[in-house]
Amino acid sequence: MKGRKRLEVPWIPTPLEIVYKALTLAKVNKGDVIYDLGCGDGRVVIVAAKDFSAKAVCIELNELLCKVSDLIVERLGLTDRVKVLCEDFFNVTLRDASVIYTYLYTSVNRSLSLKFENELMLGTRIITLDFPIPGWVPYLVRRVSDSSGYIRTLRLYVIGISNPKALIIRGYVSKDKLLSFEKRLCSSDG
Image (cartoon, rainbow, N blue to C red):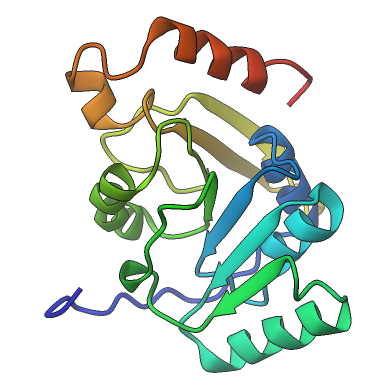
């Protein structure tokens, strides 16, 4: 977005055990395309591709972290499943994502919320670690502990259910679609 102040967020890697819990909560599978906004070393998309068979897009501003992600993806032979973009995620179209992962400040999630509503398809899952999307209603909230014993909060949002447009516009999502989402998201111990 031209004229927009570039948001800087420090890289704090998501602990691997939390990555697995987040991807499991979002029911990521081989039919998914997951985007990690501010992907750091690429661990979320690498796990999504390697262990959940999803296609994945890693978006990161820091060039050094992009190079690290690229090297790991190449070393693991995942170049056909993972794409690394060294760009500002506000300038990347998210339309083909079926899952979005963020570990970003609440203020950044707030700035992303309109982009999510405008670009994401009905049923797209957004999973956030620790920081909510203001004004949105999570579909599921899980408190999980990491290996250090810290309690972390995973929030799962679903376009068509959680976003303000869905909450305001009556009939935005059909009852059948809602039941289908609920059945899929609640079908196992996620």
